[in-house]
Length: 296
Image (cartoon, rainbow, N blue to C red; front, side, top):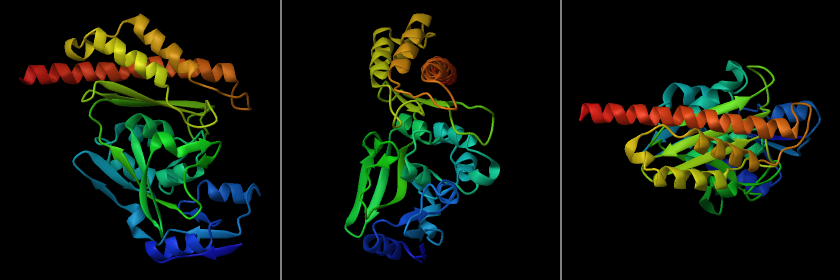
């Protein structure tokens, strides 16, 4: 196994173009596990740790440009207001040591359906900044996952950053695991309210071959909130609406049985998380609305 260690982003892109099978490594929290267990033996490892741009983030008017290697701990500390769903997801990642090393770029590159960041990125509406010697493009998060541990990157492309829309409403994240830390998700669920567009987005992890959105559930809830005037009147969402939303989220799953959980349990758990996160986010929205009206 050859070890490539570029000193700049340009050198990294050139190395990836020359060696398309090279496996990028930054935090190494996924790659090294696979190598240590002989699940993967790449011909080349492409070390990105010397490229400082990957560890930086920029808060714009509408979105955050998050470098691929920004550690989860930094997201928790610095971007809780702008990216609350992703910050909550970051809290659930492994241990403090892993949160200080791992970043969202690694989660995306591995594209495991159980990756903790995926549901939050789907719910927030993110774009992946992919680059090669041929240029740079933005891949919508909905188009990024193409199969089990497969993504839309070309062989010569690297992930440079993720562009995530700043929260315009409450966001939540929930995860089921066999214990509270150092655990792969049995299933996970992310939810984001977008009052500016009067829409809802979801993200489901570890309950289908890829991370997915529950689009039918989103469409149902969008219509129910609009027809009931909920965005304007701030009323409590009725139990029947919450239950239907939860059932549709469960139906969006296509899980498997494995050592961490059965398919039926995953479907049930996703429904429970959908109902709970909807309750939590809507209560936050109602509280913020009352506060705004009171201030006025």
